[in-house]
Length: 634
Image (cartoon, rainbow, N blue to C red; front, side, top):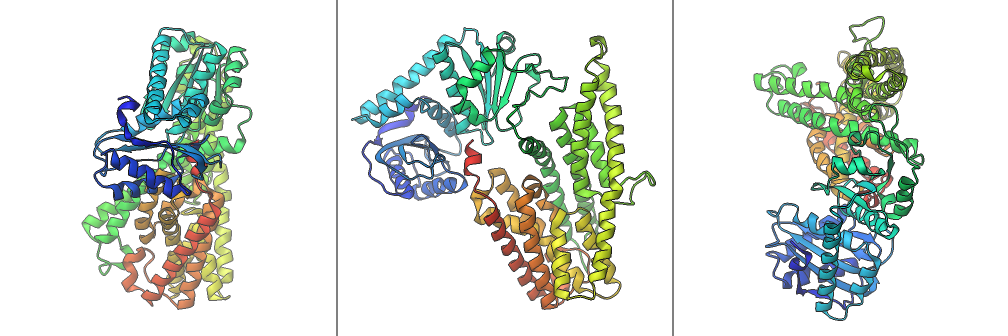
């Protein structure tokens, strides 16, 4: 479907005078409604405004493309307007927007709005075309300009379909929307100006388009990877490859093309330690990408296991055996066992996919086993494990160690004769990699375990001090590493005090453990622009995890942004723990979350402490985190 088919004369206004972003959206919604595309104007506007809270659609260069996909749309359509004086639309470049296109797509039209957005983003990369649209005197002239531009692009693609491309590119951004296609269009257009044929594959939200063929890859001088997420490079083995940010594909297109043509790019080898990384890429950015790979694969295990454990508490009977709450009935026992299996896989998966991100497929098994060694607390004095618990931090360490050990093995094996290539992935990498990673992880396990022991001693020393301060400390520790050794230290200390009849510490500790998921869930609800769409979806699950005293639900968020998430959660947990002690709340059961509230001493005050602590953590996190607008659109 062509853009001209989506945009009617009644949906265009070339002389609009609006003062605010909401007024601009109102006028576009009115144009869309006049075109007969909407069944519920109010709902459509709500969806557009909701989309803007996630991240701005003011993509810069004077352009804004607000859009929504909803049941309020009868059929897909476009509306367009020109604001000659400009209006502040929270654009990424901080400049006013002048040219507006609104996209409406119905729920049953799969990815239609993304296709239209992709074509619009590509067409609007042409500055001359933008100026001609803004200078159009009539609506028909506006439509004709769009028709001619789209036809010219289609003709260019048809004419170039049989030519041999000197430079190939892959573009991708986290959301797979605007910048993915803008980078592709800029690289292809810049290539035309330079007389160098360029073809760009887009890995967008609706899948890969304009896919590079094996024949094109073989004939090309080299490949540009302009992406802010991992792209599989295996098909480019033996070719010069440049890996850079998607924004460089837009702003440094000529430089990138010239580097390929002038043979300044490094040769990428899929089976050697040559990552074709940009020299300008910071160490922190590389670590972040590896960490995100582990976290994204770990997330289903956290969510699935957490919900099943929460359901176990819901279907159990606390009065049968309080110490075995969650497994007293057959249904509860089954749900909790399966949930615990899922949680048991969480840390090995985290470590395995971190290692895989670093060293490709040979790193997966190595990191997986390293994570299991850390999770089991294996030491040389007790190979069966159980003496120490390295936990989450140990698994992180194992993942990075495993990945870089495999890279070192690849480099060491680079001189092996080609006839023996097959033994590397089948024998050397798994055997030597697993053994070396296990040894290094085992060496560090006692040191991580020692942290646990020292914290227990410190807590015992604080017992006679202020109860409120003790509650602040033990509850805050619950958020320090979410299920790791510090978290476990305060939990073990609290459970040990149950036998002594000190039920206040257990209450404070459980309050502290409930806060991280609850604070994150609240923040994703009330401060949506601080999070990606996937994070917001995961955040909703954390309501249930937090109420169930499953602090591990916060781990993916803490792992991706530890310097902001962990301090915010610590402050929220400490607040709840201190208030629990202040209110004299008591808890006899070592688990259960909100489901054991009726069995607690002073339950209403305890619920108040949880609410206050959760909102404190939420607001602190919102203050520390920056809006995701620029990240989402890059």
